[in-house]
Amino acid sequence: MRAIDPKKLTERDNYKLLIGSIIPRPIAFITSMSKEGVVNAAPFSFFNIVSSNPPMISVSIQRKQGEMKDTARNIKENRQFVVHIVDTDNVEKVNGTAANLAPDESEVEKVGLTLIDSTTIRVPGIKEAKIRMECELETTLELGGVGENKGCDLIIGKVTKYYIEESIYEDGRIDPDGLAAVSRLAGNDYAKIGKQFTIERPL
Ligand SMILES: Cc1cc2nc3c(=O)[nH]c(=O)nc-3n(C[C@H](O)[C@H](O)[C@H](O)COP(=O)(O)O)c2cc1C
Image (cartoon, rainbow, N blue to C red; front, side, top):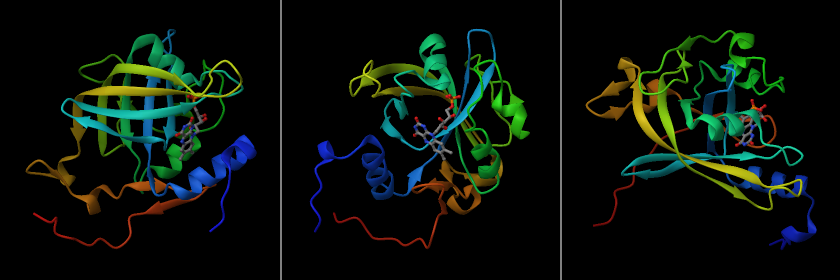
C-alpha cells in the first residue's frame, strides 16, 4: 500500500486522489437565480442525501480563488434552488453549462435547455430533467479556511416539492432503468449504471 500525506500534496493532487477514489458520484444539476433575476445552471457531483425526515440534500461548492461560485452566491442570497438528476438524455447539455460565464449570462439558453416555473419557490427548474426537486436553503457552512484562497460552501437544502416523470414513477418508487442516471468519475469521465444485483439485508 502507498501511504500518502495529504498535507504534502498540492490542492490539485488532493483533488485528483479524492475524485478518483470516491466514485461513482451522483450529479446534481442546479438552477439558482441572481438578485437581478438571471437564472444560473451548473452541475455538482459533491452531492448527496442528508436526511429523509425532513427530506434534505447537500451539495459542496468549491471556492474559486477564494470567491464563491455564482450558484453558491445565489443560493445564499435568496435561499432557493432546484436540483435535477443528470441522466443519459441530458448529460451532454448539462456538461455544456459548466462553462465559465459572467454572472449576468444564462447557461440554460446557451445549451438549449428549457425553463419551467416552480410551484413552491421563485427559481425555475429545467423541463427536460426526469426528476427535479424544488429546495429551500436549510443552512450553509463555510468550511476549510474560506478567505485564504481555499475552502468551500456546503449547502444543505430541504426539498419542498418533487417533480417526477410519470413513466419512471410507480407506487412511490423510481424505476432506475427509466431514470438512467449518470455519475461522475475523475477528469472528464462519466459512467452509466452497470449491472445491478441484490443482497438481502441480514435480520
Ligand atoms: C459533472 C460536473 C460535476 C461538477 N461538480 C462540482 C462540484 O461538486 N463542486 C464544484 O464546486 N464544482 C463542480 N463542478 C464545476 C462547476 O459546475 C463549474 O465551476 C460551474 O461553472 C459553476 O457554475 P456557477 O459559477 O454558475 O455556479 C462540476 C462540473 C461538472 C461538469
